Every structure is written in structure tokens, then in C-alpha cells.
Amino acid sequence: MFAALQSLLHDLPYLLSERVQLLALELQRATQALAVMIALALAATILLTTAWIALWVGIAAALVDAGLAHGWVVLLILVLNVAAAVFALWRARAMSQLLTLPATMRRLTVAPAMPTPPESDVAARTP
Image (cartoon, rainbow, N blue to C red; front, top):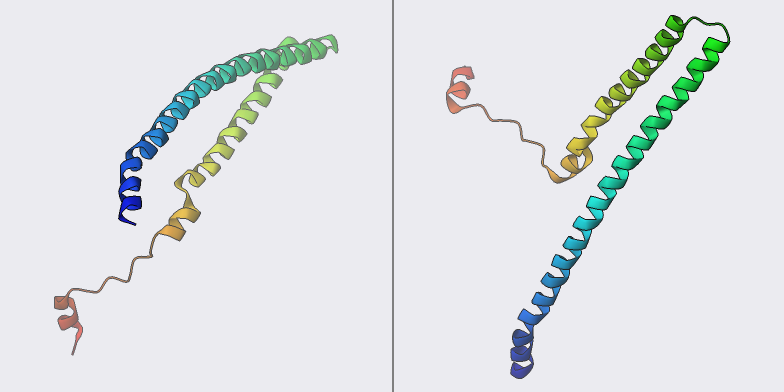
């Protein structure tokens, strides 16, 4: 029994070392993957932005061809885009309270007990 325990204690640093090395390698790979993901997200953002602009240029051209004045077309596109941006910001603000992890905080914290008044207040209240 003593020999088995001594052997386990002898092997423990190697076991921990392997796990720490695995963690380091996986963190390195995860960092590289995150960098690629950020670059791809940036590329997708640029492509989607140009597609969005092309869509509105097409809509504007169609409205101008239909006989609507340029000024009204620009105003319509501006109002629709500002309304969509305001809605997106309103939704983001409404969701921001979820960042405080409310359910986890309720589950992991204890509600504060009712504070007891100082003894000087208790003495002053008793007749």
C-alpha cells in the first residue's frame, strides 16, 4: 500500500505537467482560432455592408424610375435606416440587463437580512 502511494506521488507531477501542457497547447490553438474568427467576421461585415448599400441603391433606382423625386427617395431611405438603427439600439439596450446574469445572481447570492436598528434607536422607541 505504501509503495503504491509512493508511486502515485512520484507520478503526480508528470500527470499534472501533461495536463498543463495540454491546456497551454489548446489555449494557443483557441487564440489562433479566435483571431481567424475575428478576421472572418470583419470580412463578412464588409461584404454585408456593401450588399446593404447595393440593395438600397437598387431600391432607390427603382423608385426614381417609378417617378419619385430624388429628394423623397433619399429621405425615405434615410428614415427607414434611422428607424431600423433606433429599433436595434432599443433592443440592445433592453437586452443589456441580461449581461448582469440575473438568474445566476439570484441563485448564488443570499438576500440580505433586514438590518437590525442600533440599540440607541431601540431604547428610544420603548416607552
